[in-house]
Structure formats: C-alpha cells, structure tokens
Image (cartoon, rainbow, N blue to C red; front, side, top):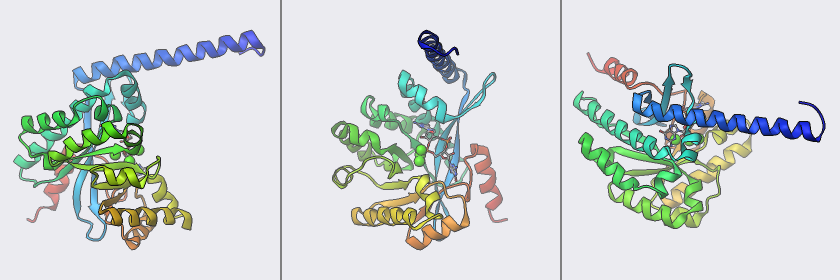
Length: 279
Ligand code: C2E
Ligand code: CA
Ligand code: CA
Ligand code: CA
C-alpha cells in the first residue's frame, strides 16, 4: 500500500472487509458441513500415569471439506462461537459422542468415558443439561459415560449462570473438567463453589516443566490445590518421556498427549482394542 493517510486508510479498510468476507464464507461452509456430514470426531486417550492404562477418551472435532481440505478446530470453533452456530455444532458433538459410546458398548469394548469439549455459549445460553440428557436417551447410554471439558473463562465471566447450568449437568451424573487450567483467572472461591471433578493442566505448563523449575512449580501448585479440593488432575499435551516422568514424580494421576496417543478416528481406536485382546 502507498504511504500516507488516505492510502493507508484504504489499505486497512480493504483488509478488514476481506477478513470479514473470509469469516462469512467459513460460516456458510460450516453451516453446510453440518448438513452434509463433513464433521467427525477423533478420540484421544487419557491414561493413568502409573499403570499406563487408558481411562477414557477426549472427543475432538474434525472438519474435512472437499474444497478446503482439513480445517482446524482452532480456526472454525471461534467462527462458530461468534456466529452462534456453536449451539448446533455442540449438539451434534454430544449426539455423535453418545452414539459412538453406544456402538462401542455393542461391540463389547467396555465402558470408556468420553469427554466432549463444550463452549461457553453452550453452557450459559443453551440448555446444556437437557441436551446431554437427550443425547444419552437417544443413544441409550448412561450420562455417567459423558464428561464435559470447559475453559475457566466462562465460569469467571458469568459465575452465577455457569454455576446453575453446571449443577444441572452434574445432577445427571456427568463428570465436569476444567480445560486449559491455569491460563485464565481462577480463584479458589469459584473453584470451591462449582461442581467440578477434574482440572486439566494446560499444555503450556507441561512444556515449561521440562525447561525450568518455574514450570514445575506451577504444576505442583495445581496438584496441591487439587488435593485440597479433592479434584482429579489430568496433564495435557504430554509429548516426551521426560515430561511424563516429571509429572508422575510430582504425583499427577492422569496424562494425555501425543506420547500416549494422537486423536484418531473411532475405527483406529477400535483396531487398537482388537489388537490388544488376548488371543
Ligand atoms: P483443547 O480442548 O485444549 O484440545 C487439545 C488440543 O491439543 C487438540 O487440538 C489436540 O489435538 C491437541 N493435542 C493433544 N495432545 C497434544 C500433544 O501432545 N501436543 C500438542 N502439540 N498438541 C496436542 P485440536 O484437536 O486441534 O483442537 C483445538 C481446540 O479446538 C481444542 O483445544 C478445543 O478448544 C477446540 N475444540 C476441538 N473440538 C471441539 C468441540 O467439539 N467443541 C468445542 N467447543 N471445541 C472444540
Ligand atoms: Ca479439551
Ligand atoms: Ca485443553
Ligand atoms: Ca486449548
């Protein structure tokens, strides 16, 4: 762009409207993706830190569009949240996870709990408990097999609404986890007030743990906090044996990350189970 007031102004104006167009196109494509079945869930294992046993899975949304290829949730989830589409997306992921759990039960693969990521807007604007109940009834599974993962921002921004919605979710028997724990502003007071079962230590702290004492100090603080409040702790984004060792030593009970398994389609998860069966 040309230097100078007028030229710059037009440059920025054009840039802004272009990104608005891109977002609108993405939103339109996402709307279509829901109808045309372009969305799927991948499942990543969570393991017990000491035994290595798989204790459950996290469902992560995937979008493959014939024109766009694979679109990352990091780019389409924010668009869905801003446009309000997240309500439909969220209902779809709950229903899909419940159907998958039911299918795994029929196939005799036991009772694995699946964690579904839930957006702030789903919690405070929709009837999350009702949606979970409906998904479970339709799939024919007990809600105890569903876990939800929520970031702490929503709980801090609208604490009363969030608390009420979470009580209803908890009453179903659903497990509640706080995602990316440590990256937002949480206070002891709110943690005590809310019906929370699990804290997930954010990947950034896990990565820092290996580098210096500071990272490890944060993890130890979360572990002490969790013990005080009687919460379970999962460390996410564990990629190396060194990280896993440090976390085990510090007393972290559950680990998740590429070291133990990447998010994979349900069929891949089943193939692993089949291969692990005694012959
Ligand atoms: P998240 O919930 O914090 O999920 C963890 C992200 O880290 C996932 O990225 C996962 O694939 C990735 N990950 C797992 N292990 C490792 C590791 O060892 N190393 C590294 N570098 N990364 C790892 P993904 O699948 O791209 O999802 C990104 C974010 O999009 C999620 O972050 C979540 O906030 C959001 N998201 C994904 N699916 C859904 C969904 O169904 N609903 C909602 N509301 N949000 C979703
Ligand atoms: Ca998550
Ligand atoms: Ca996370
Ligand atoms: Ca995250």
